[in-house]
View 1 (cartoon, one colour):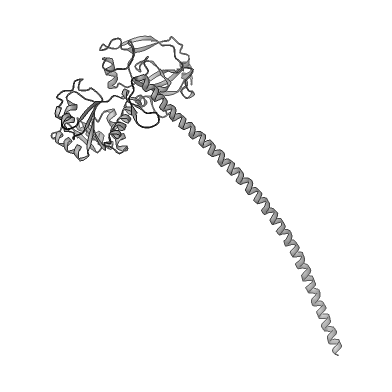
View 2 (view 1 turned 90 degrees about the vertical axis):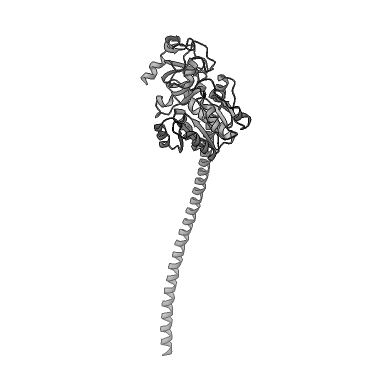
Length: 392
């Protein structure tokens, strides 16, 4: 609590240290940056951890569109503690709240503090550390979007290159849990062992002899007609060549370079194959179902994501209201039943009293009857004596 109080004392216009991109392709500069005035929907976060994604590196060299204006700190996501909030920020994100966040347009996560809209936040559980939470946006949302794209294409199996990456390990687990087979491609035997230890069944080492034949055979066996590849360069055309007719390859990275080399025209002309780009900033969930819609820029994505979170909150509120109504109904029913039981208990007690009273009366009658019977016997005895005397 003391730390939280100290954080709240950070004033506006306080200077913080930030790694800045001042010119694309140039080394980052560490500089003191003035914290901007927080807007109504914004929060200021003390950054505790931030990952280095390929998209971050591409932004630094000017190869990743973001809408940010230089100079600015890079870093698309991170985790930390909310220290200041705007007037329209919900109570669940007030100062002192531990969150993971998607960086806004004004600043990135490679900074002591980062400014973003509250709709870019996810509140952390107490048992989740900042290091693990720092990668909660880019890779998970990318994998979720990839599965939705796969479902839209009706594919039962997919091929994923560079499958031992952080995204790749999420990929095979999430796809398998949702009933889609994944043919994982890696480059080293220890990566094969790693994925299999995590439950992956189909793992190919592309450096082993006979890899092309293995991939060609297994993709046809499992009807794998979708490829997700972060390499591009020479590799995407090579892998697409080995896939069945009618396959679609999605490029979601440029680890092998910006150029696509040795594309085979017959693949597209006679084998009905398709090559597409895939980037998470061009995909977002539809408001009330699981389809993915294109977004024109990051601001639209943020708005869509905010609406999605609002829907979740609304559903949670509806559930809470329903639970309250259920409890009220149950309490009313219970109260009514209790009253009815009490009334019946009262009637039963009254009946028991009447029965007891009648039992007492019956006992009195029985005593009188017994007395009468005794007197009758005595009278009969005396009458018999009189008859005996008369006979003499």
